[in-house]
Image (cartoon, rainbow, N blue to C red):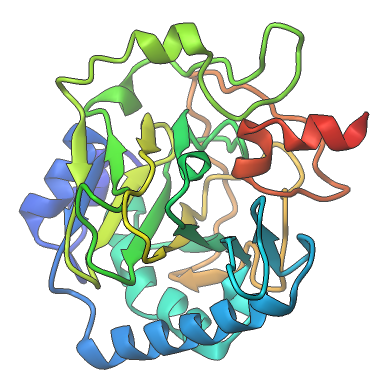
Length: 298
């Protein structure tokens, strides 16, 4: 569906102004939409997982930990696939967030994946400039990620930042000069981003950040010693079909969460870069951008 066709559908969770900003800029921040009880449940479960990560000595299928991680000083970068780790996470994704997604991709919505990223007061916690769709290309670009800040997020603790209108421009090459996947812009391309135009999506706990998979975005390092968690869930329109294997599927991957199944795929004529073959597994964007994956393969 085109943006015009989607906007003709009645809204379920978002205002018309919020929907129009998303289509115009490629992203939008939404405050005051997550009920306080749901937010409290998400925060409590997340603290429990942070405590569990203290017992982990290396990254595994559940936790992605950073350099220097220990029981006394946990450096949890990511809780992988929270949609299958606790019912609270899946209820949130398949409930309110599915309605939000329907407002922006159309009435037929498919769940793709989830992750819970943390900032931990270390320069290596920056997520560099990148676009999402090259990680999991689809036949069209009605693909988005909805983030939910689980703590108040300001310029101090590394908010998501995005470049308005970048979803309507060409996609970037996210391989390096030697043909290695790095999941980010080259230094030269990143230097060309006009930082004067960048919008930082700050907000209180419970604020949603929504960005299209073509939107250029990054997240600066945190300067706070309190970890900042951001719960991320990715959705697609049902007529957006994947070109490549899912990088990290769960039992919920490709599950229809709103609307009806479709029999026709919609194809956007704009090209999309193909990532490496991740059918054998995927680590994280942190490992790709810091080249940990390449070091491990040597």
